[in-house]
Length: 590
Ligand code: ATP
Ligand code: MG
Image 1 (cartoon, rainbow, N blue to C red):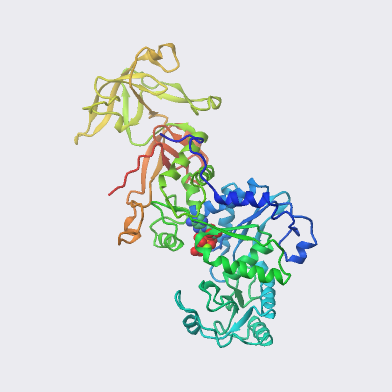
Image 2: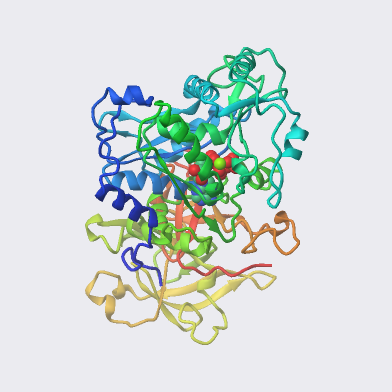
């Protein structure tokens, strides 16, 4: 049932088409690159830009990255890779209050983990928007000088009231016609810290009657007496995001500035601003082009920062790296693969249509990549003892299990076999149901890589619960010997020798939510948490698994893909997390 890597063709990506058309038209061929972000003058004095295109991933360092960000990262870095370009990692840290080094570090790790690099051909394209504050303030002054910006001193309420609505135009501020000199003076004093927060604001002078509300003299600089993690107390005015972002793109020579659809209404201001700055000679042409695509939405998941914070802070999960969270740190800890995310990004494509992707599509991508990459091991998750009554006591022998059925070159490993084995409880039935081919009194089945055994009965405790299954083995039927096929059986069970087993904690993770759309239908999203999203068991594993290194992942035969937990594993005592089951067997619970 699982797809092979090639069976699902890559989905359409309209942005790729735009890039191809731009390259064919030579749109960006004459751009120059100073080797670092800069103004028109700096780039003009430099050689041609060796990068055919430039894209960027611009996270705000105010939280952990999630699966939606992975789509954006893989899209931006992927385009650059495919078309001989560069992709920049830019921390959009223009907001002084919410940003922290912890997030910067986690974002860097996550982007690396996805296999993306901002270092290429001698360039290190890792940037902080806060390093552009001098340019931004200087550009704001130019706008004032050229009549394109003014200091407004209305209160926040007055400004809101005068903005108008979708059906009504706004009203001009009484401060809109301030002279250039007065505006320059006020802006300089805003910058010098003469005024408290909220008393003045710098606005673009565009059109208070524009049908697009974003063009009704948007705010571009505000007063905020706050310490910034990078610039400290140097500034007490900070640029608004909608002013800062286009400038960041242009300074960095970004050709295609890719963002999610909610910024579509901002595009006219993006273009207006860059046009004003380019005609003033401050920015190199051609200017970056903003292109919007639809964000990733997944069933059984919440991607909203607010909800993720709530899950962590109220301890519904065990931290940002909880394997059930759709964060990239969580995914990594769960054992998800970067290759799986890449395959997923390719399969879902990029479009402008809002769509909801089923979580099982992501799981299928994980399975497909893990099936290729992961070695096989044996684990009994719900153990019951199997006693081979005609096998000698206190002796053992080796059986040989292939490490990867698709890759014989990975060889086989020895697995000890002895008189007492752990098998899955469900592999025995005292009274078998129809079509059951595993162990029941009188039936024969193969112990995978070992012998055919014939079940002779079982032992039970006072409550009638099976405590041991009894059988006899057929010594001439060992796998890999000429007699292996002498007896034909239908059942094929996995097992682990009791005397040699590694007894381990295994966490069976499942979807965090039991509803496809958590928090809809009048429910709080917390009510949709799946109470069985984490089940901790004690399992019996083949001895080789004792040496698993943190983050090493295996297919446990018949069960799924499991990873040695990177946090709780101790040397020689790994703990395992289930990344994904072998098959898509998920059904809503509860
Ligand atoms: P915030 O609400 O704090 O802005 P955010 O999720 O937009 O949260 P950013 O750090 O601004 O976080 O996002 C960085 C980039 O990731 C942006 O370019 C944004 O468009 C993109 N991105 C965020 N969420 C998704 C998503 N669900 N699908 C695709 N791209 C996304
Ligand atoms: Mg954002």
